[in-house]
Structure formats: C-alpha cells, structure tokens
Amino acid sequence: MNWQTFLQNNLTTAEDLRSPLKLTDEEYENIRQEIACYPMSVTKYYFSLINPDDPDDPIRKLAIPTGSTILPDGELDTSGEAGNTMLQGMQHKYAETVLILTTADCAMFCRHCFRRRLVGKSDEEIAVDIDAIAEYIRAHPSINNVLLSGGDSFLLPTEEIADWLRKLAALPQLDFIRFGTRTPVTFPQRILGDYALLELLGSYRQQKQLYVVTHFNHPREITPESQAAVRALRGAGIIVKNQTVLLRGINDDPEVLAELLRKITSIGVVQHYIFQCRPVKGVKSQFQVPIVQGSDIVHKALAKQNGLGKSADYTMSHIKGKIRILGRNQNGEMIFQFRQAKNAENIGRIFSRKLDGTETWLPDDFEI
Ligand code: SF4
Picture 1: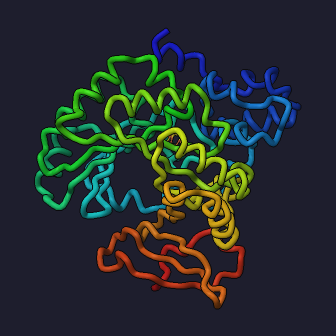
Picture 2 (picture 1 turned 90 degrees about the horizontal axis):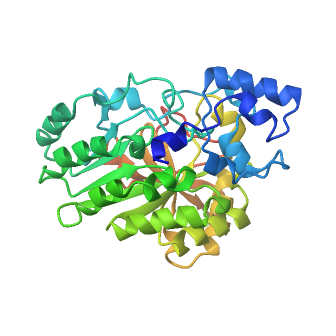
C-alpha cells in the first residue's frame, strides 16, 4: 500500500471512534461538535498507540477531540505570522531564516496544533510560487537557511519536495534546509514506505545539509516504527532534531518528561526546544501549563539528563521572538532571555518578571 492510500484509512469522524473508544453519547456529541470547527484526522498507526480503556490516555488527548478545544479563549495567530508574511506562504521574521508554509495537510491533526487555523482547513496561507520565494531569498543576503513547514512538509508528494529542494539547494547563500514534519511520530510509514523520498533526500548529502525537525511529545510515541523512521532519515545523511511542547495532561510530569528526553537522545535525535504551549484559541484552556510550574517541571526533567539531554531549551515562541525561560532567581523572579528576536537589538537580552504562578504567557506588548 502506498502512503497516500494508507492515509485514506485515517479516522476522521466521531462515528469512526464510537465503537473502538467505547464513546458515551456525551463524548460522541462533544467530538462531533469539535470536528465541525477543527477537523480530526488520525492515522491508524497513531490510533493503535492509544489505550482505548483509559479516557485520560495522553496519546488519546493528543489525537482525539474532547470538545473543550472549541472554547473561545485565545488567539489563532499567536506569533504574529500574518505580519511576518512577505509573500503568500512565506514568512520572514528573523533576518537569517525564511519559513515556508508548503501545505495545510498533516498525517494527523494534533489537538494542540498552533496552526489549527489552517491545518486541514484552508490553503489560503500556503505558498504558491517557488520562483518568487527563491527570488526574495536572493534579494535578501542575510537569509542563510529555510524551514519548509506547513502543515507537514512530508505530506507533499515526493515530486513536490524534489521541486523545493532543486530550487532552494541551488541558492549558494543557504547553509542548510530544514523540513518540519511530524511524520516520524504520527506516520512513520511515510518515510519507511517511500524509498524515492529517502533516495531524494540522500542525493543532497554532498550539496546541502538537510535537517528534519520533528515533534515527539510523549515517551510512548517512541516505538520501533518511529525509531526505524529516524534511523532511515539519519541513514540518508539528515540530522534529526526534536521540539517538544510542554502540555498539560501529556508530559507535565518531570518523570514523564525526563523519560521522553532520555528516549529522544537514545534514538539519535538531537534535542532542540521544549516549547511553552502557545495561547492558541481552545488549545490554551486544555493544554497550557503556567510558566512557573513549567520551569520547575523542565528543570527537574533536565536534572535527570546527561549533557546531551540537557541541551533542550525551554522556550516561548512569542510575537517578539524566541524567549528562553531560564528559571527563577534568588528573589523568586522568573529570568528570561531573547534567543532570537524580531527586533535584532533584543537578541541575547536578559530580563526578569515577578510572576504570580498563574501566568502562561507574556503579553504581546510587554516592555523589557
Ligand atoms: S503535525 Fe504539526 S502542523 Fe500538523 S497538526 Fe500536528 S502540530 Fe500541527
């Protein structure tokens, strides 16, 4: 079976879940209502990781609506993506990096997704003109890398991935190209079942360093299949990195997070970020962890790692930039540092805030 056919068997309706998850009528109705606002799509593979007898199963919460994520609080564009869009589907927030939304499709529609405004819903924000984007990059010599995201960039047909690589790898100013994809986690068959994709990626080995940034959130997502997908990517010369989102009810336990970080390192994936969950409409109420609590959880989990595991950065992807959450000082204030900033003068700046323990985000217009 090819990977596209596999995806045609995804679970997409409340009816698909009724019997396997033994839904009550109330659960069924909540799921049905949420799907009408934010569609559901779960691969059979990811669904097989769910414990059907546990309504609180963390894998289930990542994939299956509860009805609560249609609550109105929060925003749909929390990092100012509209304001950073220079061409359709192309964002330029930081001088060195261009972010391209290549597709609105994903193998699974994660319930905590910060781009839920478009995933499975609309192609309006998706890039349409590779040549215009390449021209924009040429005209901006500060750009030295590109992130192909979406949606999930590996949901593009392999021929379209080849088009992107052909055009972008020809730009000498680019040091490397990154792919944002959760397929190693939600749909490893995309990688393991398409030799042409691995051959394509491997063919750039001498020309341009390729990275895959993936997204493991729970230790049970690390399976023989996901491990094999990572191994196949590494075999093609790709460096695989991970970003985790700190999520209530999923990995907000130092033991669970520590196990996740250890397992990520053990399968040869490099730690990148532990992201503070963004205040996304509906997602915020179900998944966010307060910053003070999050910092304690992350530091307890990092304390159980060796040097490689400790390299994950607890970070807030804020409208003003990527802000590290460093921890509390002796006065109980939370210390932050700009790792990256829309206003380049802020890069590296350290600042503190007295937090009362309930805050889950810094206001868009905060002053340093
Ligand atoms: S794979 Fe990424 S972009 Fe797609 S739904 Fe999940 S979190 Fe969102």
